Image (tube, rainbow, N blue to C red; front, side, top):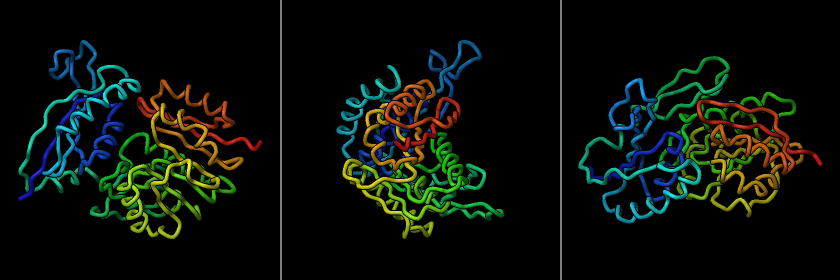
Length: 308
């Protein structure tokens, strides 16, 4: 018999990424999501007035976790969410104890192989997939890290990664900032990069990324570390950063310092209304915008570091 604790909040969809990372950083073993449209009275929405998409996010914790501390940290985190996504972004719903025989496996039912670009397919290790000619299959298990390719921001990044490896010459080295499961850096290695470094502030994510690199037979070309970006030496032909707009702008100088002259830079995790701001900030730092992708309320940018 397995025993868990759960912590449930409601949030608008654009804040799901940030809350997922928050709970993982506070010891969550995994997340479950329930998206519905709600009207102002909280009932499933009628055609009028316009409904709001609300996600109920349940984070699962070990039995010995102190959810009082989690709740306090969550309430302290709400002003940070409000800064990025506006007021009323998140609210506490409930905390409970669970006796369950199958939760740890049940979430896997919803993680299936997905083709995310022209060639790239992402699958979990427990799902078989027969690759078609020309497809590159990435085997990614999330563990206690974020990034499985199911979110729009990750998908757009992967599409840009595909695109830049079609250029001549393709990037030789890549830096994946906020690597999570390592999915973006591993994709770069599978597409031909000879040296990739994934950095993350969460040691567990670094461990998960390393395991995924082994599963994809690129451990000789992909390394992961939880060193801060400021402690990373050298420059790279391709820099990937799937964060949020405010963090990207705050880290702009550190990110650009890791870009070699002429390097390509992929930025994502950006709400569409903030993409112009991020683009201008990086343009002012010497990165020329090349292309923008949008998917729903999210945007991703491809830029090139000026050579002078």
